[in-house]
Image (cartoon, rainbow, N blue to C red; front, side, top):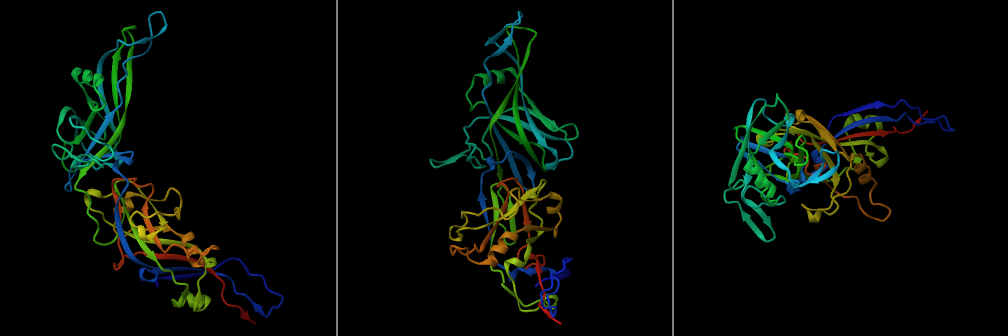
Length: 422
């Protein structure tokens, strides 16, 4: 058992018709259960979701031994558009003259590691790749079998442009194309309008949050009209090496593909201590769902490997595992907290020993209530995961059982002391 604090509630209890028997005032008891008193069988599983599920991508170079590159594919460049001619009539212009084009990439400067100038490069990919299955080794990895890159890490590319990115000067990088590239991309297939973004400066990791192809053209119908087309990226993913190794101990949540932590729960239904609880309500105390006003799983942070240390918020949630026998791909119940999860900012995750509390009140109440009216017992296994999954490239790490900072279960109970006879 952990620390117990006791406080009397402000409400008063009504007296019965017999004034010789007066119920005592209800008290609030804050209690911590040690890991061995409520949980066992900790397991960590990886591989949930895909990197292209994320709305962001990552580039890195020699960042604690990790390399990462972004792959992006763009929509077709328009061949015509509506333009008002010199008489003001709206007509279709299919004789556009393309004079400039460049790729704009947005950088999340707050979630990137560099504070100074770094160099980025854009190269046209020369090999077909599948956004859903591409990884560092394979350009395609589907049921038909893997198709490896000619060179691991995205194969061979045709260099097109570089950009010195200075976060103090803005949040975008721009890669300008020559006229030959513009013509090729205008006439070519989707596979031609694809590229790889590399970081050329060692020791950093950058988070990219969007890319678009911007094309500038002159109109044949009105020489004074300059047309600007924003061609969106239709596909984007990133490939990295090496992947994170499974932890030898402790808990892990998040990442891409994502990690989950699973534990079995066996809550006590009778409490025989500690002394402060017994002094307040008497022992043995039969713990019921009506007594639980709050329950939270308290975790203590530990540092993740440097390459995967968070630079943005990791949102977490707890869900019941509905069929333990099918782990790690077992179906899960609804979130025990809010739909958005519990946000844990990077400044918390980067300080070892910081405390976070994941609410599981509804689960504890249901567990203590026992089988439902149809005789179904409550789940006895919980999963801790990212919300949504995956939501960040980086992941959160926590101490496991057997350590000084092991997880505990925080309980807040509201109970009435035994009747007093006067």
